Length: 65
Image (cartoon, one colour):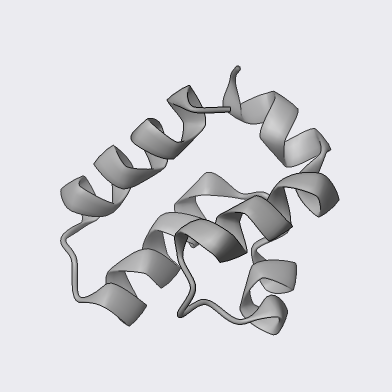
């Protein structure tokens, strides 16, 4: 699956992202609107990760869907 598919179906994947990154609120995920860069920024902020770590987590999550 590629990121365009996730972005296009964000409503469906938003719940799955919420399960993966439980500290992110529904409002925050609504604002992301499927944009990978913004999701990575939120993960960095909430979990104290580097950009590279956040991107790796997103890649792992993407590969499982």
